[in-house]
Length: 128
Length: 315
Ligand SMILES: [Cu+2]
Image (spheres, each protein chain N blue to C red):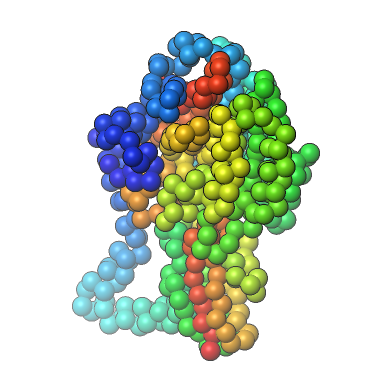
């Protein structure tokens, strides 16, 4: 069963996120850190309204936004996923790797959603 | 080895270990079932030793035509290899049951390519959809136009061959938030009516994409109302349940019921709980073919459970 264990190891290695490396490099040199700070902050503002799909889960699982906000869902998996609101308020097409779907929340409320292919995947957008 | 959910609870550890290792090694062993205990009776060439009725069919699954990611950059190519194995079989199977995920993204060209390659077998096909086959704009319209002729509802149907009653079920439609696979009330009512006229001694083969039994809930590997279908099947002397979806072999015997999931022809998936997600498992390319394959199912004489030969593309 040795070969199987090595498979599992290589599968685990796949989950080392490339983006973490990029951020570490940005923050690396002390001088660069000053410059990098602005970049990261700007990205965070932008990312505040983004839900990413990694490893068959929505992150963040719960997101608070103001009325009128457009939320972008991006799939980073090697498998297609979709975003379906429980009461059919919105429904994306199947999102292949790196595909995105955006929806603008025009009214307040709690919007629970799931993946139409893998319904175990669930998330929530709270609009105030 | 992390393999919870797939083992046969209540059986001896020794047997479970043997079953796991044999199954996971993917060596193409023929499992014959007698008295609820599987035992290997030999490799594919020796299948005749198991009192075959001469009625053999294949299970193929999870071809994901169109998939081109790291776990297998050419899923159409490995499907071609699987089909070459079918063409090379000394005894032609009666037909092929495909347990879903024919395509990866339900694109017309993916269905076209799949049809073309499967057509080369010259063997009749029976299909059920996987969730990947219903993600076209029309949410299943493309699948139904190609494969749904004569089927009921979202594509379920039954047929008889050599005295065996075959039932194709669809458990990838109308999925509920937080839930597992779903058959739905309409399909269950149809199944009850379909089985009504059948005698208890009729061998039954049920096939569907997602396992009807719950194999691993955390990853959605099971069917929410699958138990209701299994209850309808309990009275029969020989029931075989064929599923795909999990891209690995799992076999279990419970009373008169044999559960079998087939290998994918496209890419392997991890054992339950052994990875952060059930996504495609990347393995060294020289090992990929030992984790892909197809299954030969032989109907044995008498009221015996069906015999399986799970063969990988490496062999
Ligand atoms: Cu999904």
